[in-house]
Amino acid sequence: EIVQTPDVIKLPLWDVAAKGPNAYPDNASYVREQLINLLSTSFPNLTPGQVQACVTGMFDLKDHSMFKDHLRDFLVQTKQFASQDNAELYAEEVAARAAAERQRLDTVVPGIIPPNERPEEMMDA
Image (cartoon, rainbow, N blue to C red; front, side, top):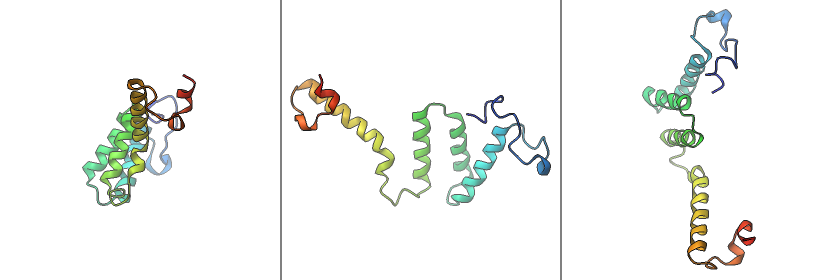
């Protein structure tokens, strides 16, 4: 978001002496190109379309949750995480679902959750 806001970074990020002042229309275009080049060389198993879609999503998605999902999808596409246990990519969502289920159970049947398994905020209620 910082490179897309014109008044935040006023000077060009690229080497003006080597490329000239008009090499890119703005800093966001420069960062996009650099990011595409970096990801293309780092992940040669991905097609240019996949890399382009990833970078476009990184710039276009403003919602933190959607951005995180987009980045997680990219990591799975790279196959870097496909052969490993990627449960930690979903740990936050799993914990939230478990907490919601505990809350639901305690609401439906008070006392169903043993006191030693109850979160501290539920103990005060």
